[in-house]
Length: 168
Image (cartoon, rainbow, N blue to C red; front, side, top):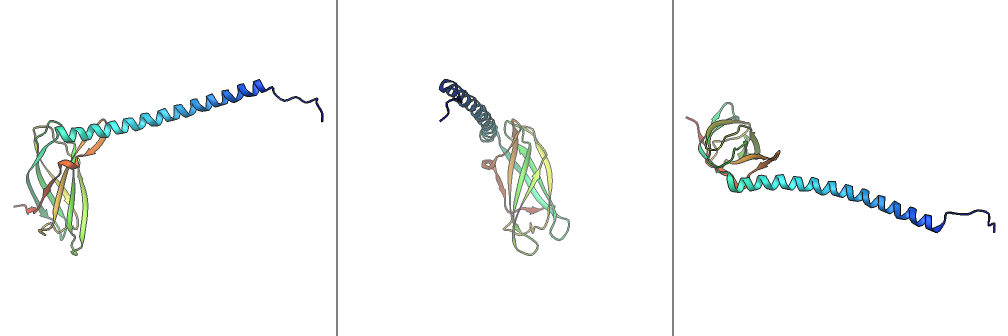
């Protein structure tokens, strides 16, 4: 066995290994810190919106009706009043009923018109391939708010229209 070749000393090897572990731990910590902050920001915006939904939002449907423009499409007209303490940024309508062939169908329509607190507004949304004159058709109206840049659909504040009458 030749003794002319020397390796690194055990002290230097230990220092290098400890340094490598410290750098690796710092990188993992920075990555984890970013993940936690992003998740906290997302949860904060979602919970802020849901809290506003529960405590400050309320609305009433004053009138609702539909007009038929073709065989199974037309316009749903709504008169809505914001009776809450915050602005409503829009509405989501979920129509559940039958299409022109009689098959069950669900459809979602977004209304992006806002209503300031204490105000009322008439709005309309087009629908396609629904038999709204069928008494089993229901329309669920969900208010939508934006809080800290995130959109929240206030599902606990939904109101149901059934039956919906034809406009006169």
